[in-house]
Amino acid sequence: MMPIVGQHALISIIVHLAFIAVTWWTLQAVRIDVLLKPNRVVQGRLLYILLTIAIGSTVANFFLDYWAWSTDLPYLFRE
Image 1 (tube, rainbow, N blue to C red):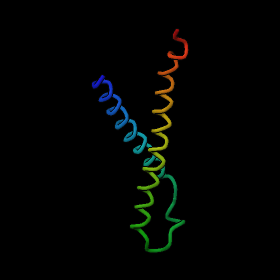
Image 2 (tube, rainbow, N blue to C red; image 1 turned 120 degrees about the vertical axis):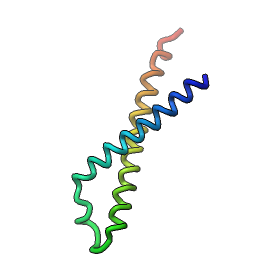
Image 3 (cartoon, one colour; image 1 turned 30 degrees about the vertical axis):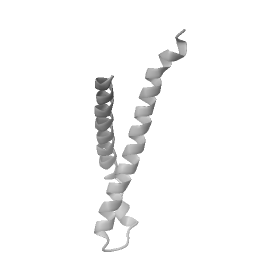
């Protein structure tokens, strides 16, 4: 049982980091600096980081939940 829990933890970490990286790459196409006040570079960078984590984690959680639900479907048809 313990190796399975460890495997799920490792998969979750990898999936979260992958989706955070994809989100960071995607947000580079958005000009958030247009929305910021002048001379607020640090706040703009922090906003990019927080948006990246929030969006990437949400998408990763959706992906992991969907994966878990699909692997639980066989239990619906067991007797």
